[in-house]
Amino acid sequence: MFKNTILIYLILNLFFTTQGFCAKFYFRRIAFLPLKNISGINNIPQDIVNHIAKALKKKHHFDAVLPSDLEDFLLRNRVRRMGVITQAQAQGLMRQFGVDGAIITWLDLYDKGENPKIGIGIKVIETSTGTVVWGNYVSLTGQDFTSFFGLGKVTSIKQLSNEAIKRLIKNFPSSFEIQTASRVEKTSFAIERFSLSPLVTQGGLPVVASLRLVSLLEPPKEIALLLGGKEWPLEKRGNGWWKGEIEAPKRQGRYFARLKLFMKNGMLSFLDTATSLKVDNTPPQVRLSFENKVFSPNRDGIKDVLIVFPELLVPDDIKVWGFHIYNQSGEIVRQFEGSGDLPHGLAWHGENDEFGRVDDGIYCLEFRCQDKAGNIMISKKTEIVVDNTAPQLNISVNIVKKKAKFEIKCQEENGIDKWQLTIMDKEENIYKMLEGKGKPPPMLESPLFEKKGLYFIIEAFDLAGNKAEYKGPLITQQITTTKPEKKEKVPISWDYNF
Image (tube, rainbow, N blue to C red; front, side, top):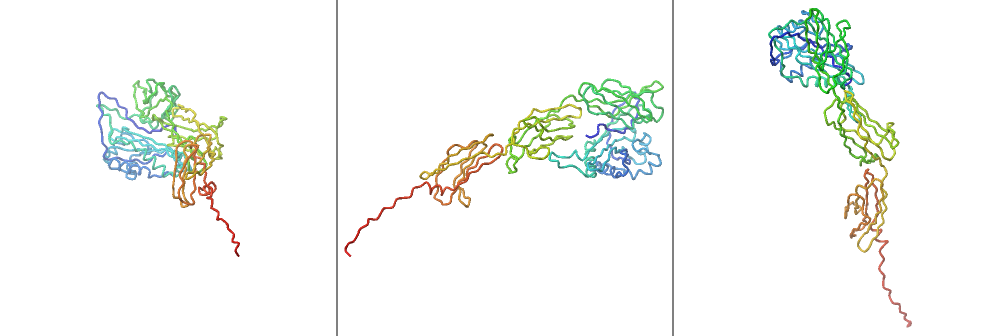
């Protein structure tokens, strides 16, 4: 993906619990707050939230309270920051509209250009406690959908938005688990924004943590990030911002981030960020399979293209990938590069990077890819042969009695795939056909048929798909090689009696 951070707006309660348990809730009615736009673009379609509500209603069959129905409530309760609602405001929604949950939607990226871009997220809040119970974020660009032929790129921001919404709610749960407790302290803080950059990395590499905390009462004295069994202090930057750099755990795995707040009165508080760091130390595992490693890009419809099929053996988040084709001097003549998911297949038509035609010869293909953690995989080089030269085929035919004998000489550097001998008439009615795999035998025989105007065709196909063809008439050969019958002479006598 083209962004390294997921910016999740959260509002969480601080719980000081003597005993508690998890309860499962099924939402029957949900309020959808107006869109929170932090993209810097003004003319954003405001019906994005309505589209999300419609899609979720169709999926889970709950009642939806749309943003237009909440205008009076938001004005009366002075809700100006759509990315955050307090516990009291959440409970107010529950009392006035009878909703079990509220959904906040934010947009941090929106670009209508030639390569449209969108970044959109949602979070679900249980209204009785103001607790965030679920969230998701999706970032897409039009180029994410480009195929290996350069086709499929999404150029419409509307189409891209529809795809982003579809992915955003794909795993929206039908029920939510909510922690209840015997004693709950009133909300003191709101996490407006928390991010780890990058979210996926190799073990031991630096990761930047960024936090914006809204203090409803007294702000904390210090904040530390708890991750991977270590405590990392965050530096206060002002205006509610805290930042710090940590070292990713060396062991591969997923690590959830929590915040430790040091209060001025000596008390400690803890907050879940709903964000995790993925440590990945394993290079991508990719298997390549090929079709037509020996091919002839001459556009005759037979083995015109080399096709490579990359297969990801173990699920991985691919960042960039590339196919590089080298000539025998080690120079790159053609390269294919992309980002995101691997292509289902890739085709090389024998062109170079300037789209000119490469010479016949031996080439090598190498595949490389890098996952989002920075692990690199490089394949072994695979030999590829470009051959546009047809086999050399020399035929001589002898007609002996009632048989045609074909003497065949065939030469080809890269080997013969198959051959075929066909005897037919002018109407293409076939009288005899012989065929086989590999190189044709040096001698073939066929009986002659009592039909005028017969001719023969001998074809040979090499491994690259090039075809050699020899065609000739059988009747002509028969006339020139058969001796005419001798006629008896009539005896001559003279009559002298005249």
